[in-house]
Image 1 (cartoon, rainbow, N blue to C red):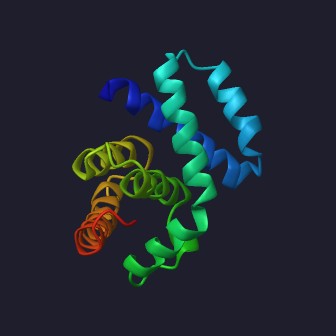
Image 2 (image 1 turned 60 degrees about the vertical axis):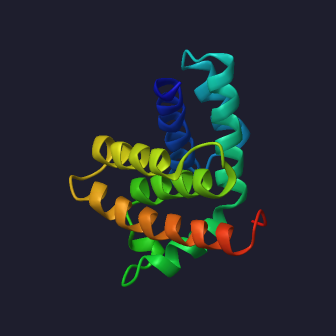
Length: 145
């Protein structure tokens, strides 16, 4: 399952990156990426849901990144790293079936593969901090999120 989800995360990263850099619409890039990657139905479903949620909650996610990334303006974070953070934070907030540790580790692997060697530590630091806030919020307010 994780291998398929890892591939889905890579495709979601491509989609988010293309939207930001190429100013492409989400449905257009998703259609292209789904047609040009061999993916099973469950993987496609996860990919589409993650893409849509990460995109639609982008402002909320970016605000969280801004609060945690001290001394870093959002626009100064590398585009790849910013989009890795967006998809991982989306998982942390809206995919309770995925353990936080898995989302964080997958994001670190994406950073190592697609960004600089320092990006893994940067991504880990931001996500670890946000994950702790999510857990505190979840524990403090019951099931409310």
